[in-house]
Length: 183
Image (cartoon, rainbow, N blue to C red):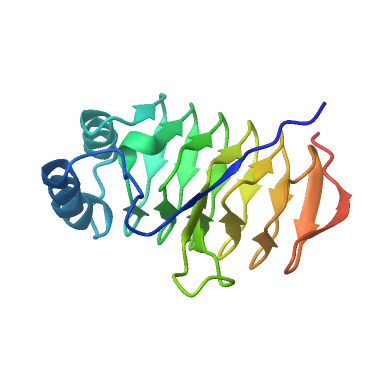
């Protein structure tokens, strides 16, 4: 049986970001100085993420100009590479497995809005990137999506639905193009 992730809908006045104003404001400053800048000290970045509640494994490399919304909603496994200009919009939990690559400009987008309502209510969903997943440069993973083990989302593609294990996807919306064979 395949795993699924539930989407949540909030009237815009009722969303709870999971931390108080002071913690969010403090993170905003830390994110701007140490993550969304040319800062290169990877160990300090991992320390700061943990300080703000993220769970982070070993050998995690976070390149410059990365933007992370709420680190307390972030779980990162071992041997993970997060490239320049990646945006992790962690309004909900974002789980990144082991041996995952987020290429330059990738966007993990947990939130969206309900265009059918005049209030544009917030819709959020967890994102799960299982072990061995590769998210290509400038690609988008939407809330409620699971990228199963060793799936690949090619450059400039959009995953609005789950990606099957060991499958390479391309396009908007992303469609399977071939099997991923690891040698």
